[in-house]
Image 1 (tube, helix red, strand yellow):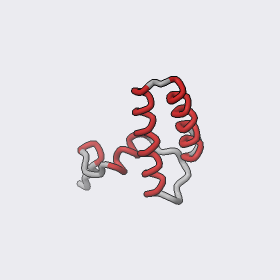
Image 2: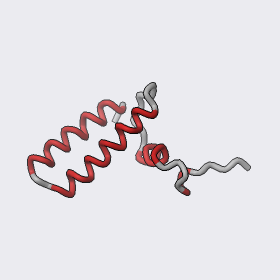
Image 3: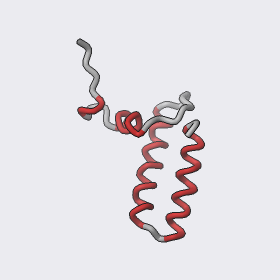
Image 4: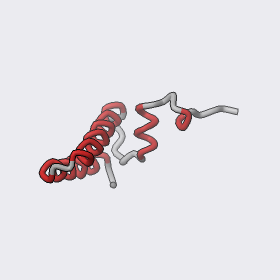
Length: 72
């Protein structure tokens, strides 16, 4: 994706398709991803680039071992 808004639009379209087909597993996955990306956008209102999944995860879970940064 080129920016966060286009990624959110794409996820919304995929979510609508999943709801029409009744794929509950895909609906749950997409709803979670959509919610997390919206939360990321709220935390970073001036950022337009599409974040990686790790960036979103670390924004929501800063104390996770994968997200800790150590200064030597």
